[in-house]
Amino acid sequence: MASTQMFRVIAVTVVLGALGPVAAPGWADETKPPLSESERAARIQDLQRDRTKVEQELRQLRSQPEGMARSTVSRSELSDQPTRSMKESMESMPGVSAGQGPNGRDMSLSIRGSK
Image (cartoon, rainbow, N blue to C red):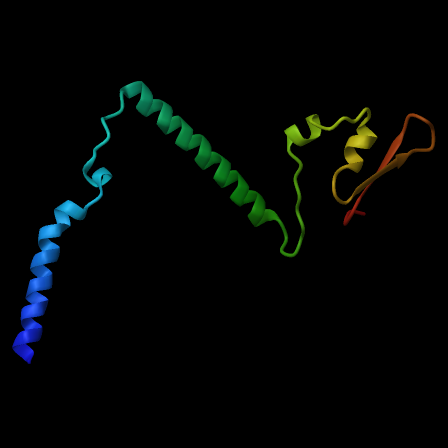
C-alpha cells in the first residue's frame, strides 16, 4: 500500500516537472528592453514627484487630529460648476454656508466645526 502511494507521488512529481516549462505563462520569461538615459531620468523624476505627493499627504494626515473630518474639493470640480459668484461656489462645498454681510458687498462664511 505504501509503495503504491509512493509511486503516485513520484509519478505526479515527474508529470508536473515535465509540464512546468510548458504551463508557465508566456510573459513570465519576457524581459523589458533597457530604458534609455532620458527615459530613465524621466521615470526617476515621475517617481520622485509621486513620492513627494505621498509624503506631503502623510504629513497632513499626521498633523490632523483624530476624529476630525476632512474633505477636499478639486479645482476641476469648482471650475466645472456653472456658478456666477464666490458665494455660490462656496455653498456647494459640504459644511460651508455663505451669507450676505452687513452691506451689499460683504460675504460672511460659516464653516462647520470652526469658531
